[in-house]
Image (tube, rainbow, N blue to C red; front, top):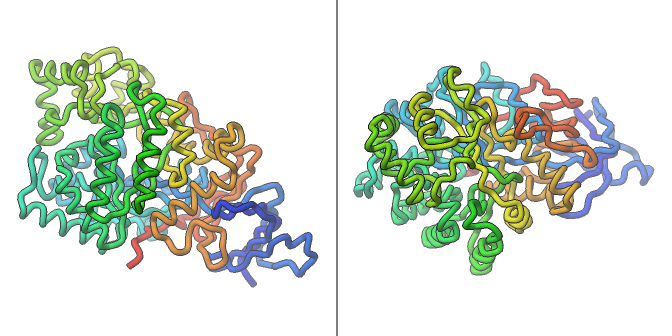
Length: 531
C-alpha cells in the first residue's frame, strides 16, 4: 500500500491551467497517481497508509527560490524555517558572483571576509571543501549524513573564480588566467552546478570585461547551463546594463536569467515598460531569457558594496587601509556623494535611504534599524565592524515591481539575506507575499499564474525533468496552503515572523512542515545539473 494520499485537494498544478479537485497519492518520494474529482465521481478512492484531509487547501508544487543566499545557513541551521515555512522546497545558491566554491585557502579566507554581511564569517562552519563537487557533497552529508532542510542547486560564482585565478586587481586577465577560469567553470559544471552567477557591481567580479564574461558563458552554454548576472547597474544606466547582458549572452549562445530584475532609484521611476520591451524584442528574436524578482521595493546588500570599485581593489584588508586614511576616505566620500559610485549603481548617495540591518560587533547594535545620516557614520561602521554591516536600501518603485512580475518569463526569488538583527522581510516572506498580497489582495496575478511563476517556470530554467508540476511520476515536493489566509508574517519591524496559511510542506514526499510546525525531517539534498 502507498505511503500517503492527500484527499480532496484543490490542485493548482503549476502549469498555469485551471485548478481541479483531486486525490493525490505519494509513494517513494514521488507522485504515483492523481485521481481527479474522486469524491464526486463515486469511484473507488485511492487508499494509503496515511490519509491527509486537504479540504479547503490548495495543493501546488513546492516553490523554487531562484535567488537565495543560504549558502552557509543550510549547513548552520537544520531547522531553516525561514524557507521551509514559506513552502520553498528548492533554493538556488551561489548567487551574485560570490560564494564558497571553488576556492583555495587564500580565496576562502577572502570570500568569507567579503560576504560576512550575507552569511556571517562562518566560525561555526567546518570549511572542509574546496571544489564545487565537494561543497555539494557536504550539503548531502550535512548534520551527520541526514542532509539539509530543503533542496539546493548551485551557481558557480564568477567573482570567486576571478579571485582564485586573477586576484583582486582591476585589469584584464592574461590568456593563461582566462584559461584557468574556463577550466574552473568547466569543472564546476561537470561537478553539478546548474550555471554561473556574477556580481558586476561587486569586486572583484566587476573587473571582468564583457569579452572575458563571454568566454566563460561559452563554457556554461556547452554544458546546458545558464548565466545569472547581477548586472552592472540597477540605477543610472540600468537599461544599458540589461542590454549589455542580453547582447553578451547572445554572442556566447548562453541562456540568460536576470537576477532580481528591478528598476530602482529615482532615475528609473516608471521605466519598467522600457525594460520589458527590451526583453520582449530579444525573446522574439529567439533569446532564451528569464528573470526573478522579490515582491518588495527596498533592496538589501552590504554597506561595503556601495564603495567605488577602485576603493575595493586588493581585497578586504586594502579596503580597510583606505578607509582608515583620511585623505583616501574623503575621495571615497566624494565619489559616493557627488560623482555616483559604481558600487551604488552610478547614483549619488542619499544617505537617508540606507538603513542598517545587521552588524557583527554587539557594541554597534544600537545602529541596527537606523537610517544613516552621513559618510562619517558609514565610515565608522565599516571600520569598526570590519566591512560586515548589512543594509536595506529604500530606493524601489511599486509600479515597477508590479509590472515586471506580470511578465511571461518572470519567476520568484527572495534574495533573502538571513544575517543581521533586522534582515529584509523578504528572507522570510517572499512566497506568501506573492500568494497573499499580490495575488489574493491586489489581483496582480491569478492564483494559477502565480503558482506557475514560482514552480514550473523556475524548474524549466533549471532544466529539471521531474519537478515543478503536480504530475504523476514527478517528485513529491509539494505545498498545501489556504489561499484565503496565506500571508507573510514578516514585516520590516519584525522580519523573522513566519508566514500563516501554509500548514504542510513536503520535500521528497516527507513532511518538513506539518500542521504549521517544522518537523525534524532533513529531506533536502543537492540538485545537480543533469548530465
